[in-house]
Structure formats: structure tokens, C-alpha cells
Image 1: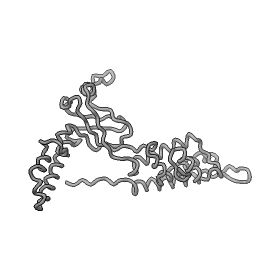
Image 2: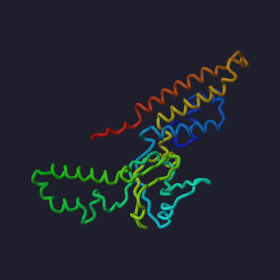
Image 3: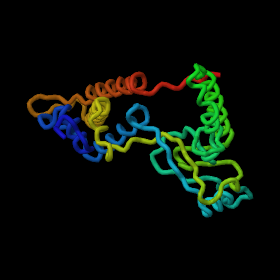
Image 4: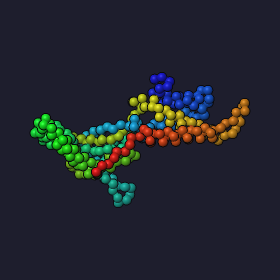
Amino acid sequence: MSATRPASKTELRDYALRRLGYPTIDINVATAQLDDLIEEAIDKFQEYHYSGSYQTFIKIEVTDAIKTAAQSSTQMGSTNWYENNNYIDLPPGILGLNNVYTHIGASSIVPGNIFNIKYQIFLNDIYAMTHGHILHYFMTSQYLETLDWVTNSQTSRRVKWNEHQNRLYMDFDWEELQAGDFILVDCTLRQDPTTYTGMFNERWLKDYTEALFMEQWGRNLSKYDGIQMLGGVKLNGRQILEDGIKLKEKLEMDIRTTYELPPMDLIG
């Protein structure tokens, strides 16, 4: 990558420093501080920017060990309370869960089974498509999709998940699942910048990294604010700090109003 198109944390750090005036001006921020700020900027980008995450499916194969663990419980300290272990550990980097599917083969949206209702509709009613009756098929399909959403929703399956625990709790009878079955998790996953290096060249991320550097630079210099240097130059760390905070706040407002995906409307 070129100097103005960073493709790694190091290149992004050097690019932001040059925008602040380095090497003409000495930027009084330690390398460890700069690395921490880049991680903070990436976290913000992943959580709010539409390009910082993506929707994917994670397939989990059910084993006898998973079933046995999910049907056990753990004593909470030395008390008489026990917590159910009906969960599956998920990989790191998940921002949110959209849905969890079990008994995938019985779903109305999978047309591969001859006994599937959608398969039967295509088998018996496909001729109607050539006679202007596509509206009936469309309305029936919408109805079937709604039934599938209700029967496989997190509410009816009683699914719980927390980002910090990173455990998928499933409150149902685990005897319904057999070893070899699959659990399909529809989730939102953080974009990995080390794999998809184009993230480092995102305009908002570059601007936000510069703002964090400027803010930290101002904080470091603020304790020496007003001290006169050689040649009559006075340090003005407080002004650098205020400029960094203003730029940071503007960019945080931009990502929420311009780059964040809007919430989906609920109709019905």
C-alpha cells in the first residue's frame, strides 16, 4: 500500500502522525499509547460503522459431550443455588445474535425435502405461474415464512446471549437434538482488519485515529501548559486537547448519523 493508503496498524499509526505534523513537529505520545488508541478506534468502527461488521451464519455440530454439558448444572459458590449449563460457547468477535435455528431440515424455507410444504407447492401448483396467479403463491410463501420465523424465533426458542459471556443459552429440552444434528446461528460478526486490510484505509477510521492521537497529545502536554521553551515558544497543550476533543465528538456524531445502519421498522 502507498503512504496515504494504510493497510496495517503500523501504517495507520504513521499516517495519523504525519497528519499531525510528524516528523516536522515532535508528537509527545508514547508508542504504547498510540497502539491502544488504534485499538479503540477499530472497536468504535466495528461497533457502529456499516462496514465494520457483517452478517454470517455459524454452524455448530451437536455432540454427546455438548448435550451432556448442557443438561448439567454448576453450584454457585458454597450456596444451595445451582446454575444451568445449557449453553454453547461461541467464537469471539460476535456483536449480536439475529436468530438461532434448530431442526433445519424441518424448516419450511428448505425446499430439498420431498415432504416439505414448499416442495409440494412447486410440485402441484407451479402450472398456475403461467396463468397469472402468482399473487396467490406470493401470499402463501409470505405466510409460510412468517410461520417459520415464529417457530424458529429467539422468543419461542428462549435464546439468551451476552457479548461479554459469549455463551449461547438455549432454554429447551436438549433431548430434542441428537448427536450429529446442527445448530445454525445467524449473527453479526466484527470485521477482522488483519484479514480485510482495506478497513485501515476507511476515511472515517483515519480521521478518528488522528482525533484520538491529537486528544492524547494534548493530555500529555496539558501538565506543562504555559511553559516557555527555548526561542520563546510556549506550550499550549490545552488548546491541542480541546481541538482533539471537538474533532472526536464530531466524528462520533458522524458515525451515528451517517455510517450506522438504521434500526429495522417493526410492522404488525
